[in-house]
Image 1 (cartoon, rainbow, N blue to C red):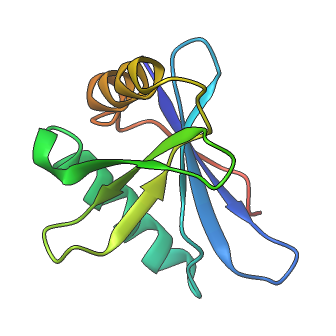
Image 2 (spheres, rainbow, N blue to C red):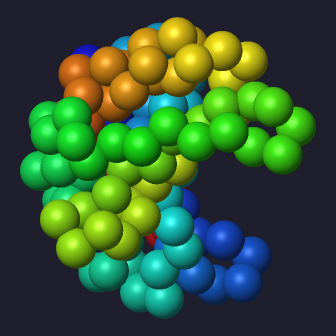
Length: 110
């Protein structure tokens, strides 16, 4: 089962990553000004990751693919790593759907 890691950036903002059971980062959040907001972002992933229509695959300028997970209000909650093929991005989406409901949060901000 996957887990979330809550982190604080050098600019003092907060973000989280979702890791698969093998430790690979499968989703990185946007930046949040407060820890509470980042925790709300995790809760949003837990709810929205099961909805396939919340995912959108995009192509980067260099031809690689990535996906965004969006909340019901269309706000981006998290972004994937880059993939060389659409099929790989789809596998990444499946991994977020499988691991996203995890309630394990490792707080690395303290």
